[in-house]
Picture (spheres, each protein chain N blue to C red):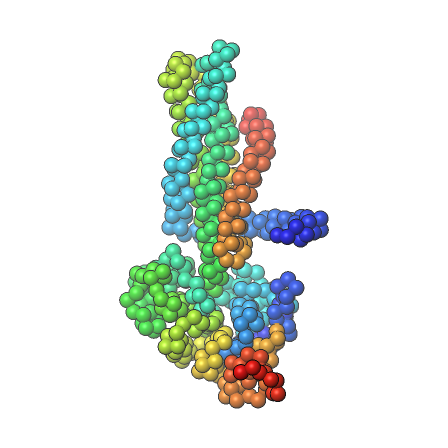
Length: 252
Length: 266
């Protein structure tokens, strides 16, 4: 469904991605993990063509989206929903207007049907009855749920999650994880989650890709990654900063 | 910026390359916008809101500017014309100046300050908070949704605001001439009508239409291409006002030459 071939991306002289290639199959739930600032979000944005690579291809259902212009991409983006790190809700609109935005732009559904779908999707994210609230009145966790509601209201085939649990307390993070799983199972979507939250990665990823030093360093099932003996994977999974070599004298 | 890097940038020609790149991007944005105007169905609600924001909300600043410009122009003209006994031509000068130059230019500058800055700040904030990316993921072209309604609103509102500014400027000039300096009201009014042609009014309104496009496109471009964080938004806002104002002043000169030729030969 999604195929990335030899993706390269630099910002000025700073190379962020180098020869990145992988495939994600229909209905699969894939987690991309890696260190902060390592290019995970940049990679995710390439999947929906919010960024253009310096070279390489991104194929969505066999169609290379890299050479497409912004107007051609509108058709491809109908297949996607995306939850942004900061939710990216339109702050001049209410929750209901945010979620109904894609329908109002299309002008294909009557108002009562739009209202019904908004209410349905808000129930799915466990926030019924908040249609008239403004984004500024919502907590971080609620904003992410509304962002997710907006991303899935169109019933897309692929949902991209950019750091869905960053900045949230463990309880809210857990509820967001459960929500992502519920969306995946109920709507039968392909999910791509970018995270450095190991608990989320373990729960959400049927397969995990680890981005390290601009490349896909490791790939495998959650079990394989979390039990890996590779020092770099192990260091990341266990959350250890530069390990102190054995025999180094310490003052403590 | 340290002196060495500034010096290096100045003489490496980088600023020329950056300036040309910016100009190219601005042209491409303008091209996309014009294409979208003729192909995309604009949402009337969005357009009406923008006309309200640009037009109705700019009333006070435009009226005050027009009124005091008309008054000071009448006073200055009277002081000079009185020396050569041409008092009754005072309002004619005010009228022609307000219609063809001061009305559109001052209204354009005021709207560039108020609306151009607001557009750049709003779109800049949307960009840094990823709201523009969110629009794109919702299969919406930012040009269709964000730029076209603003461009059309400014094309509609700026000529209307200019007309208002011209009327209030002439009325204020009349009050100063007649009630402050005691010029005969019949002659001052007669001369004003005699020397103000339709071409002066047309030139003013055409200029206002063009200036509306300049404020919209530069404001939108600066907002959509703004740098990261609060500093980026601040810089985009300042640059939107400065570049719009300078472009209005430069364009005005060429429009005066061109419209003078076209309108006075028709």
